[in-house]
Image 1 (tube, rainbow, N blue to C red):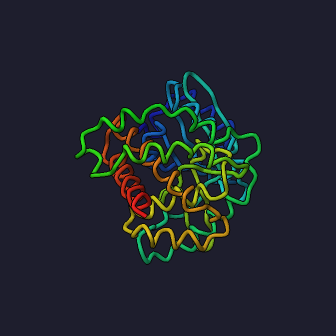
Image 2: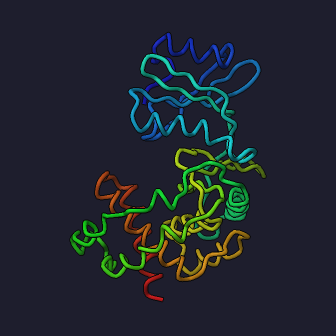
Length: 284
């Protein structure tokens, strides 16, 4: 990560043209998705500024955050500006105070998370690309089935592949879907909840974000049946059992593939959670 003070002077000046005079800055961890992340304070406002250097997929996703954040007013922090200068891309948002949500069993944050998921599912997707199209044409199942059995934790990928084949069609819908909800995407500040990082939203069925979050709950320590019972209290939870099984099998394959491609403990943990949940669905 690059700190605010280490940015090229021209870049900082271009940002300040958008924010107004800066009285203080605080660098924050931005993860792999950006090179700089800072809270910028001016006499009038506080803003959160993210930046990437060098273009490529990270720049495209950051620009998408700016565009897509306006699809969820009151839920996503409002995007305020884009600065494109000298191979740098910066996006500024209204600063959203708060802490990440705790998804572990018994957490007092789970009702607020549930309300946010339902609020997102009630919104139209507008012109977003359908998740159905993003998922169509998956040709990586042979690669998944060929992985060593130990890599799959005993999950029956061969049996999952035909179940998952219907998933692209089954996730079709016209609701706004974040597609990457986890505890770190929720910012809780008292009764106020914001959802961040709108890099890859899609048009999909209203239950899809809740189903993704069920897998995250399993990863956070919930038993699969308990995670589903949590989701069943949501207004958006309209998914049929066979559809849910197809979804779980597809996501387990997708996340396992990504884990083998990218490496890292976070990707491996996420894939294990998805395989465990898919195996449970397959066994019912």
